[in-house]
Structure formats: structure tokens, C-alpha cells
Image (cartoon, rainbow, N blue to C red):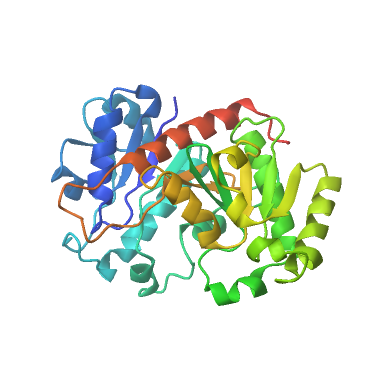
Length: 334
């Protein structure tokens, strides 16, 4: 089976430790064989490593040592102390992972956390991983509504975000009928293609408290969101709403839908992290490659202490595996 690959992320954070812990947990599951793209010498300080020349060697090495596609750093790593000197390598590891997926040498990319502020200091021009992956794959054909769209998943909850890392004061100016329309279609198609759900059910959260309460606490639901829901329903998307966000995430509500469309970052992330703080997974929808990542940051404050939990990374590996299998089974045109 074609392997998975993981980009190391910021080498000064918990990424190296988490990857080793994930390998130790999964090494006896050959269907989850993955290779690390990063600095082999750094990873050797944490446990068994096998340098591999290309992705075809990953599966054979996986049971005995962590396979590493060696892309060495040029400056020393001080654990817990991010250094812009590593930024070009961090970006290169991501780009290499994308290239391996696009060429068919890997079937999915899992990205360990990056420190965006470190990358910005060296001229990185994207808000984060998601947007950079969209740019790297923009020239590759994709049979469906194009992303990238950020989905967060934990247990029985999936949320997608219309806006991500912007100030709350700017959310309204970034919302448009077209953005939310495309978000719904990307999500609808991904639930079929990536998750094997034949008839996806979506819900849309309102922007205002009580979903505007008939226009008395804001009119976005009346003027923007409800007409959009009607339009999507006419396009054969099973979507309901807009609903008050404070009624969407309890257990009985979650049973009524497959994904919730949320309008800003915390609207979706607070319920998800409350439900499963350690195990959430970030999944990028609407790209020609499969990409997942753990739903947490670099953890500089605990790096090197041996206490970082690998739950989220392990779940991201499992999700990448399952999505890649679903993409092989389900026709591209959905």
C-alpha cells in the first residue's frame, strides 16, 4: 500500500516527540505506515530512525524504526525556542509532502504544527497551512468544488469554517453569499467522497445571538443566510438553518447532521474542543490531495519534557488513512 507522509512542522516544538510517540503506537499496523519528512539527526535523539531514500522504502522500514526522508536543518535546534533560521526548512518539508502526494508516491499528507509567526518573519505569505496547501495544489486539476476548506472533526462532530484566523470585528465584512455557498458545496461533496456518506446532512449556524431573533438582534440571517439556505436546497444540498449556535452542539442536535457550517473560528472550535480537547483533527477539504493535521499548536512551552500527548496526531493519521481509502473507492464525480 502506498504510504502516508508527515511533515515535521516546527522542529523546536513538540512535533518530533509526537511523531515518535505516534510511530511507537502504530508501528505494528502496516496499513498506517508513514514516513517523516524532516531532519533525521534531530529525530534520532528521540528513538529509532531509519533513513529512507524514497517513499517506496517506507513500508519495509516501518515496523522496526521511524522512516525518515532526510531533509537536514542547517542551524542547531534549541527545544522550546523557535528560530526563524528553521523556517525555510519547515516550508520545504511541507512542499515536499505535497509533491509526494501529487506524484502518487504518497497517498496523504499529515502536517505537524507550524509556528506561523516564525514563518512570517521570513516572508511566508500565507495565513497558515491550509492556504499554502491551496496554493501549492492550485495548478492540479480537481473534479469538484475547489477548496481549501478547513474542517475540524472530533468524535461525532464535524465543523467547517467560513472564516478562520481573522479578528472577530472583521468577520461580517468577510462573509458573502458566494463564500458560504461554496463552503456548503465543498463540504457536501467531501462528505460523500472523503467520508463515504451517501446523503450528507448540513446545518448552518446563525451569526447573531438567537440567529437574529426575527431581525431584532441583527438582520444577517434574514438578508443573507436564509436566502442562501433556500438557494442551496434548490441545488440539491440537504442543509437547514440558520440556527442559533447555542442550540447546535448538544448530543441530540449532533445526531441530526453530518457537518455544521460555522461562520467564525470560535463558533466551531469551542464546542469541538469542549467535546474532545485532546483528540480533534484538522482536515482540509476540496483539494486534489488528502491532508490532515492535529488540532493543536507547536507546544513550545512543553517541548522536550516528554509530556506531549499524541492523541490528536494519531487520530489525524487514522483519518488520513480512511479518507484516502474512501477516495479510491468512490467515483471522483459527486
